Image (cartoon, rainbow, N blue to C red; front, side, top):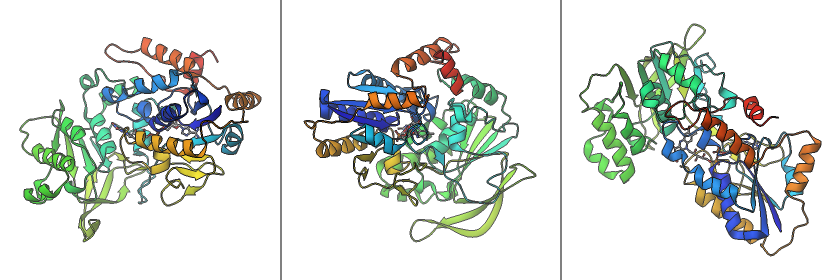
Length: 434
Ligand SMILES: Cc1cc2nc3c(=O)[nH]c(=O)nc-3n(C[C@H](O)[C@H](O)[C@H](O)COP(=O)(O)OP(=O)(O)OC[C@H]3O[C@@H](n4cnc5c(N)ncnc54)[C@H](O)[C@@H]3O)c2cc1C
């Protein structure tokens, strides 16, 4: 019997566990550890609450968690409650799937002003992440800005722009729904350093914006290259650019607007003790397709500034770390002997949920080649881990505990919502009577 510890229960962790189970059958026991008693990582805490169909992928992960060879061990933070070195003593291999939960910084003056928040914080706030329950983003001004030109920026801008009615059927947490309902924000500006051809936004996410109840998406066609140039784009990107162009044809009067401000590089954030405006430099594309400042500057008013420019993986003691790439240093998923990385902790914060599947399968294949299923292990696996956690008074939870939390959240949902998430760590533990 082999014993594997997968650290992190997001998509990468679950796809890896699924692949290991397929590769080893009943010759392995796989423990999926997570710092929270609730699994699924960004499926719960990142993917937008109004995109319920995407969150349904967790049903597939449920099947993995329910299978005989797999256990979920929650409420255990690796690097704090147990070290990676200890896990390597207890298990035949350890696979780090901890994602990239920290916001990248812009590195410009004024970034520390109240009113400037990272997308991980803002997204965590509306998705019930316990670290951000108290965020209380300022929604009392009329202007907000989102910095970044990817889908996370679009999620943030869309959530700020929807009416209460448009959140029906979503699992947005109650505190965010109430705050957004009272929000005074009328204009959200999305700032991107380069142009429409360089966006990292996908057609589905852009297409939704044309149908918002109270918000009109606005583009300036002079930012776009001649229409013929779109032909050279790959089909998905071409479609995204076509959707952006079509925003200019929408004829409707709506009280709110979402402005796409391209070729706009934030230089600093200013205000009297809090964010009030962003000073932006107009850019143009350089020979290599990067953004080059033109020297022309202007102001974008914003009392809420959300930065959505990427994420990084926090280092863990004793694990090789790629300072430049902000993820674990790895060679195609291998960090060191019997230690591997998958998902965002391996590749950095790019790709969709589905991208993590081949990633997890590839690393599982590599593990199976290096630790053949027929080999015997003299390591204790979960039994040893539980002894260690008990000795440290760490209250580990299991999959049944998660089911109980889920049932309680479902039972207390407001009408039309699949659940009302708990937003504090203690609430999870109280639900479990701990
Ligand atoms: C805001 C946002 C919206 C997104 N929307 C979409 C979308 O609509 N469609 C789509 O296809 N993709 C979307 N993505 C991308 C998708 O969420 C990622 O591709 C995917 O979640 C990455 O999987 P992961 O397992 O590497 O990381 P994560 O999902 O982040 O999972 C990491 C897990 O590790 C756990 N963990 C972290 N540190 C520790 C530790 N020290 N000890 C124990 N456990 C730990 C965390 O609690 C978490 O459960 C979105 C991403 C973001 C940020």
